[in-house]
Amino acid sequence: TLLQMDRQQLQKMLQYLISEHHTEVLPTAQKLADQILQHSHPINHIQGAPDPTAGGSAEEEHCWHLDAEQVKEQVGQYLTQGGYYNANKQLYFMFTKA
View 1 (tube, rainbow, N blue to C red):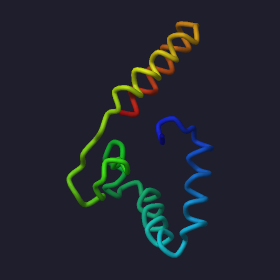
View 2 (spheres, helix red, strand yellow):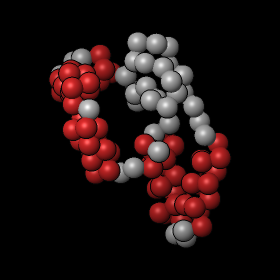
View 3 (cartoon, rainbow, N blue to C red):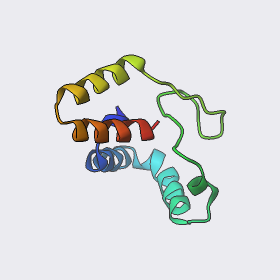
View 4 (cartoon, rainbow, N blue to C red):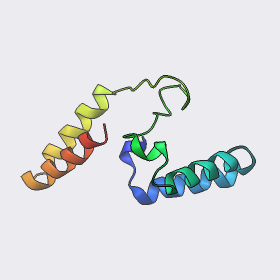
């Protein structure tokens, strides 16, 4: 689901999450924001981030999941939209997220 969202949707979701659960997540959100803003912090030298749908936490071994059906559906949608350049660009961005 996160891969289907654009920047504005992700930002909105994060703001609602913090707003609705501020006592539980605000300290962690602030810590992560501080770390991300420090260019030399190790979090900025790691590609990607833990998959929240995979079940593990940041400290556990990372386990990534690929939903092949969703990928197949998305690729099909991009290819049927027409326009080689647009489909190529969408597919490029889709696979660089993985």
